[in-house]
Length: 398
DNA sequence: CGGCATGATTAACC
DNA sequence: GGTTAATCATGCCG
Image 1: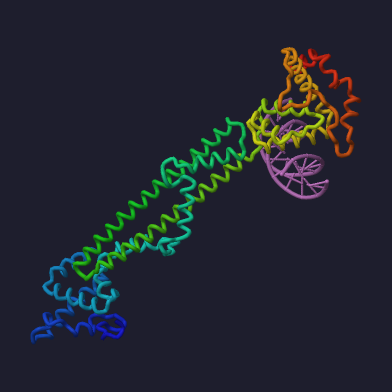
Image 2: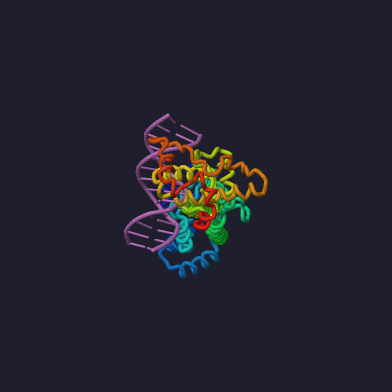
């Protein structure tokens, strides 16, 4: 291909004096009056070349004139031949002829030059990542996909906070996600439509141009390929920003879940009940933690946190918790009393120790500080004799 | 708004 | 790995 005789000027510039034209097909150059014919062709070429300087309207008129010109078929054949032989399409003539679609070309260039147009190969890893993520998040893929609910469920399982406000946050999250999803889909659809419209537009233009210059199907294919690549790069941007939006939403959601929420009253009561009824050893076993967690609709780690906080805070300021301790001791005593009144030995699995067993909640610095405080405040905290004044205690508490 | 209550987190410890 | 102690960050109430 490289070694075959070149018909084109080495630099493919001025066609008027193009060597290729001296190698005319017989049907064009036949006859003796080659000079006049030459002149004729020269005129046409001149017209073509000056199209560049004309307005679109003028060019339109010229185009029509050219199409109707008696020499047009011959010239067209020459072009075909040149093109076929050179195997290239950068013939200046084609550029000149296509000048009359300058506007369209400019529009094309405008769209095609949108930034970030890395012409990646089809199996673009980044695009795949984005697609996977969108799918996983339930943005793309089947309607109301498992993605969102999976995330919500995971978050719920991770935190397991009291159901009510959770579902509120979930629905909020869901609503926002579906909003993103909707925007994503409408935008995607818009892009697809625009891409199709633009493709057909360009194809029409090329078809039109093919009347004036030879355009191979490969060229059209190539053009369409370029358009599709460019549009898919736009799509990629859309996907990327959608991913970002989802990530932001998700991190906000998770942040919101991290926010401290006070446990509801019932949960606190259950925990306190256990704590004060196991004051001698307020270290629930794993099973007990699980049971408490289930009862309180919180996680085991929250139970652990609660007990950790409670122990340290109780220890730090026993006096402050005195009243609370009395109350819960009284309550467990009541429970025990009513249980025994029913004739059955109340022995809840979660509270194996009896109420008010304030023996020795080991303090790191003073092992029996608790005991001594108990005895010091014996009057106000008669844990051992709770049963004696249940009525008054309960009356105070409730 | 200030201060206390409280759930969560972290580092050190055993 | 669980606990302690300190601390953070937020909720809540006067």
